[in-house]
Image (cartoon, rainbow, N blue to C red):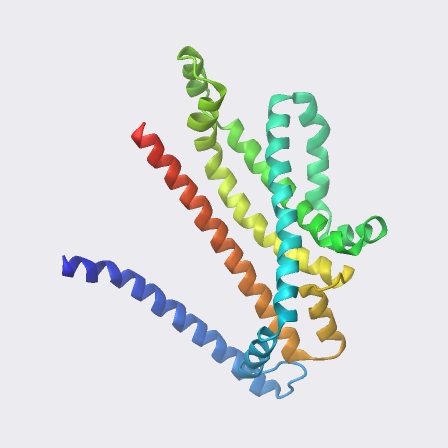
Length: 264
């Protein structure tokens, strides 16, 4: 048993070692580039940037800024997911709805993020622009993948459910959800990353109160390169953390559904 435990830990240790080596390698590249450029205003060394990040993290304003930015963007993400799923069902059921709304989805996906942000500056309050921008990034991606998942549902299973008289809830749980999940999960994870980056970009231009994007813009204006890079690292860390949390949640829900299915 002890041998099997050690063997099970080896892949984790190897993965951790690879992650540490990769991080050290790119930090070394960063340090070398900073030494070669030798201008802190252009590229600050890693130690200076991380010292700045830890200094910022010691203030209440930092956490308030991060929390409000995350709230704005996550609200846009959640609304985009809900609307994307609802419109996927609607456009799959109604051919008229598909004909009307599919061109709109293509236009949203083709329009640059900056164009949306600039247009929103005329029609919306600055506080809501990051939320709307995140929504517009998520909505068409969730719609397209969920629609594809519904479309790819096995027709034979649907016919069999009619024969056995399954309820709508049972059809949804046993047939449609397993079919849609392989399409929905990658779209949700990808769109969360897009929503976060687009939302921060919207904050740069809209400059709402207490916003990560606004702090990035302020650091750029005042040529505070260490602070700008510190906020950039903060954006990357939060994006990775949000994706990890969502991925863990989706995996857990999938495992719970599989366990319930096996018991049944």
